[in-house]
Amino acid sequence: MDGLRLSVEQCWNVGILSTEALNVVITIAFEMTPDARPVESSIRQVSASGGSAGAQQAAFDAGRQAIVQCGTNGYGLPSDLYDQWRLVEITFNPARMSTR
Image (tube, rainbow, N blue to C red; front, top):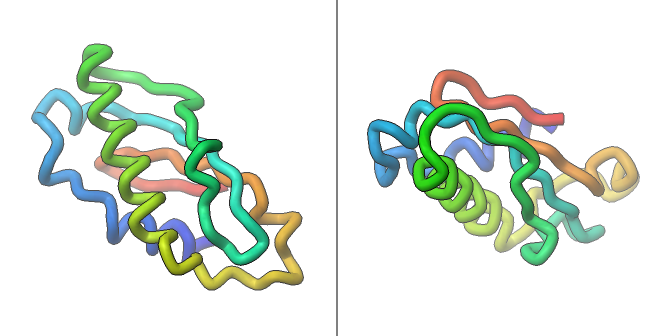
């Protein structure tokens, strides 16, 4: 899962976020296909803290874009462990990223 987190982190463009949105911590959940691609229709916000509703939406949009953009060709996860990474939650935090 660290590889997935690092991949998404590299695609997460915080440069497009406002100063307010940079203070938002947002958790996004999504499903993965067996070939390690995100199911776009499953991407949803689980929780958010900090900032206004607009800032939280901007943070969600940036996180969603990172997940989709980096997952276009699949994340290269081991297929024999699909049950472990079929459902993913990523917390986007400008100070630190975490995945489970």
